[in-house]
Image 1 (cartoon, one colour):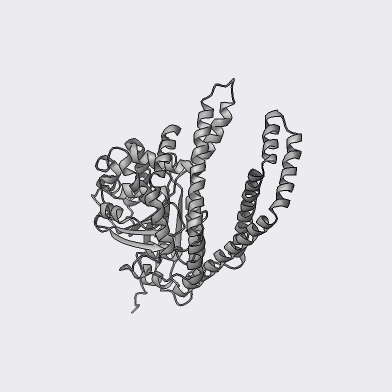
Image 2: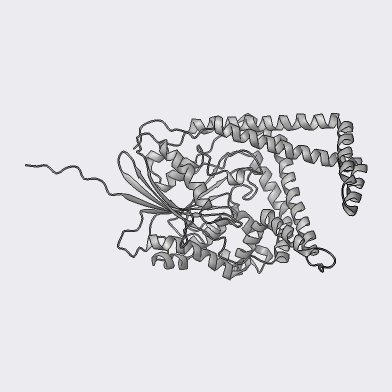
Length: 496
């Protein structure tokens, strides 16, 4: 009598919605940034066969999407990635409103800066119930680096922010001048570039905070990305779980969407998540949005703050102490207002310990972010939990601490050398400026000549050029190190 063969377990389908940050991001760019490192990490999992990978990064219709089929030793999973591309879902606010909003943000610095410094100097947040988010002590090189330069770099970053706002106002005023007096088109182009680089993010938050139409349109983008999967029309079963990964300003958009019963009714016909759902906020803008709530019509009247996360939803907040956007873990008053019935896990990771690089470096953190992302995708699976290498995390943190300390030492030696030879540096730079003035038209020649004659301004220029060169060289060294030393982690041990 023939015995029936083993029954293959059904394929487990997971849905992952990716919500990008602020700015004019091309469709599919964020999906590529997130999925590529995750797939490299999965490929190194022992016992896992080659993944079947399909992607549409720039489809003419619908969102960017990718499908990954992974054969684990004991089961098969299909991960469906979809990008909620909300960058073009609303019209930007007018430049005067954005610039005013940016200056109003400066009024919050007495709250932002002390909190950021506490986060820089402090340790990991308190332990949570989930073992994937247990705290780790800070290595000595990192602690020394924090005390020496953490506060200085914070001041420098805010100085750049203030300078961008000041230049934005200047060029906005220039763009209003009549064409016979000055070229207003050039001023508008420069203004647009400044707004895009440092101020546009504030403008996106302004649109969400004060414009209900913009907020509803952004939320609808998330709904259109998720609805075909949660309410399929082809007779297929919905996925087993949903993970929404939201970066930067996308965290505010994702919170508003997932906390609304109207959103869930539109995508699944229920008042809340119909399947296990996790919201991961990385480099979240929610702290910024929360601080600015009182500037408009009062917190009670703003759509953003009239709702809470539903019961049964997991909220995982990931931050670095040098990421200026979240400036640390979620504020206590924010958590009390929006958490609702959600389970909250907060984890600090270490990317590069850099104010300028940390915000966009979560996705390629193969030791601290990627394994936890996979852990949430797989429904907090025990096999994924075992892939978190705590010894590797400690080793990498010590290495990053040593690298940051060497950066500090190189910068100190370079600036010290310039200070020791500032007379020679002034003569060389002044000569170059004078030579440039000789071949320049009238007004520019006058400005260059005046600059060459001012020793303080020339020395300030020298220090600025040196700082830019150092930043470029350190960035090159970091890229070389990432290529030759910081290879993707390859987990050890049997897979399950």
